[in-house]
Image (cartoon, rainbow, N blue to C red; front, side, top):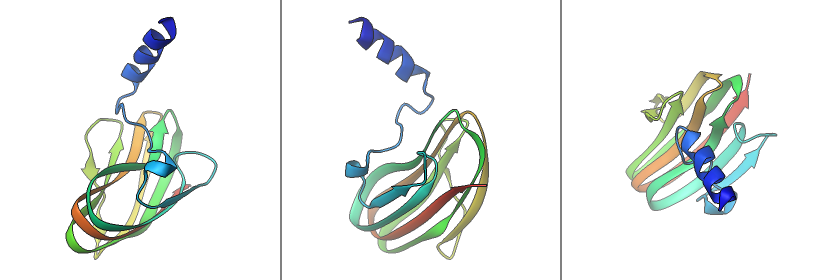
Length: 129
């Protein structure tokens, strides 16, 4: 009982309350480079509706560089990020190409793939600079 109460308190303190998805819960293949903030993610989606937290965490202070591509044949697919708040913001993409650096200041930072009947491909790399 005490353990359950402690777990609830700890999870309540996490600003997103979600955390990074486990590998078996992802649509694609993720490789991690030492922590949950960095690595690669490749996925082929077919009519995917939902959201996957592919990278991130709480407490790290670093510059994270995200690059990659998102291409679709139908539906809507987006890459979103939270950086210090619960607000999910679209990652800027030009012609499906992503190249963005984020200053992570020890607060919550997560990278998500979202889809609404999305059929397409996502290829992401997240690196610490």
